[in-house]
Amino acid sequence: MRPIRSPQILLLGLFVLAALVAFSPNLNSQFLSDDFVQIGKVLHGDYAVAWGQEHGGFFRPLFIWSYVVDALIWTTRPFGYHLTNVVLHGLNAFLVFTLATRLLQPLEIDERKLRLAASAAAGLFLLHPSHSESVVWISGRADLLATLFVLLSVLGFLAYADDRGNSYLAASLGLFAVALLAKESAICTPFLILAIGLFRRAKAGRLLRGFGMFAGVLILFVAVRASFIGTLVGGYGAGQHLNFSPGWLRDRLLEAIVRSVLPPLPIEWLTVLSKPLHSPRFYLLLLLLFAATATAIIWRRRIYSAAERKDQNRFLLLITALFLLALLPVINLRLSLYSTQGERFLYLPTVFACMLIAYLAILLIQRAVLCMTLLVALGGFYSWNIYRVNRLWQAAAQLSSQLADSLARQNLQAPVTILNAPDNLRGVPVFHNGLPEAVRWRRPEDAISQIEILAFQDLQSETDEIHLDQTEALTLSALNANDKFSRAASTACYEVIAATSDSLQVRRTVCATPGQTFFYSSGKIHNLDER
Image 1 (cartoon, rainbow, N blue to C red):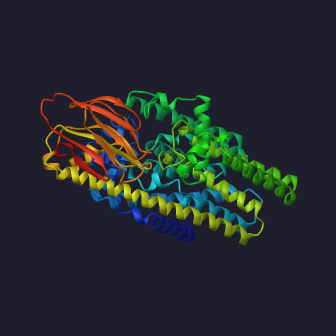
Image 2: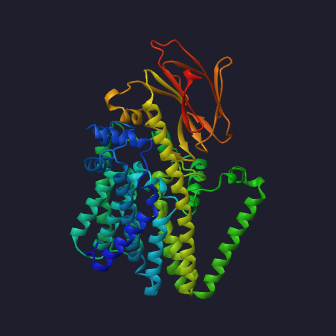
Image 3: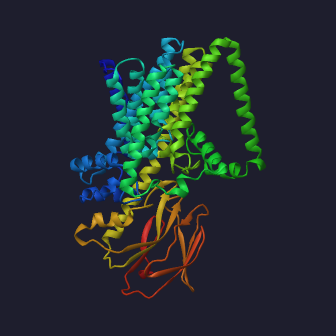
């Protein structure tokens, strides 16, 4: 890491400003899902969640402490929390530019093209359509913080590897430790610095010494984390994090590769990709991909010598390796090809995906003007998709606020049962968690102690309807074929008789007190007892 000069400060300001512009539609959006749980605990002075003792066993103290700072300034106003996320994203884009510049410098590239590639990598990262979950969702901040300190740590190690003194190694190790306190995915950092050191042919002694010290910090972190959460794995559990079956890993890798380049695919592609061998469109896609790859290989052989191609291949191998290493901690976790769900896991890997796109562009397009035009066009495509996804997050936030307000205005009598709470809106979390907390936020003077949710529902639209049949047992059916029920479980007053993805059959049981029952349909919460 070198001292930041005035031009760099200006560039940093431009990246932050661009991030504010790109995500401005959501700066005033309301809280969603996990926000109510985590921020609610902070507002009430309960910091146990910071140490992984609640809410799934995630040991992320820096993440929660960032909420503490926001809560002191903004209390329950979401604007400030969103502002923090967007500024962090702008800072990360600047660091992508800085790291790309450092990595490209050893190559024999014209200075103008080098700056173009670094700027393009940072710009594509800033506007990447797979970043909405990390930036727009306040609870996605853990990835923003972890990536910030991982990139700073890597830059610090690069300075150390260039014989700039042991103080840079100490700073790099400290930043790595801070990154781990933001999110566990930072465990890939030692392997990132090892790969970069090997590529740059760093002195073996300095490289091994540094890697060993990074490994020591990692081992210490794992031990401290295990002592706090009481288990070595934690998080989503061993069944998820330790699932290394070849088929599962293959599908997750293919999803990650696609979503590291493209926005969520149209839902109509589901039938094409679920049974690809039966789809002519899939074969056409493969043919186009093969033709583009073959053309690129032939073209590169025509314009570069064997020695030049060898250096290029080394750099392409490095960036690919960095992408895979950054993906490794989250490779077991599911993300969606057709929605924003799970895309936060790609925030750090897309640093290297964007570098790869930018490098391939300057490598294969000799004319700078044409190269810049195509990169700007890709940035425009990304911008349009960010705008579309921003609107979806706005709609989800409005739905969340309306439902919580509607429930809070009711004359609630415990136990309160909600038959079907909206889990997500086309992948954007609405009340995957946090509906009881959201109601209590709005009624602090009269907190309802018992709010139970019988099932959750994936929505395709805010206006999706539910058909209610009370002929015999109470049956809820989704009228939109793509809506799904999930996590159905009996409550104190209702027993689940049968549950499928598109319908629920329940019956009322004997309760100590009658309480109240609500259900969701057509964008509103309805009182079942008033029907």
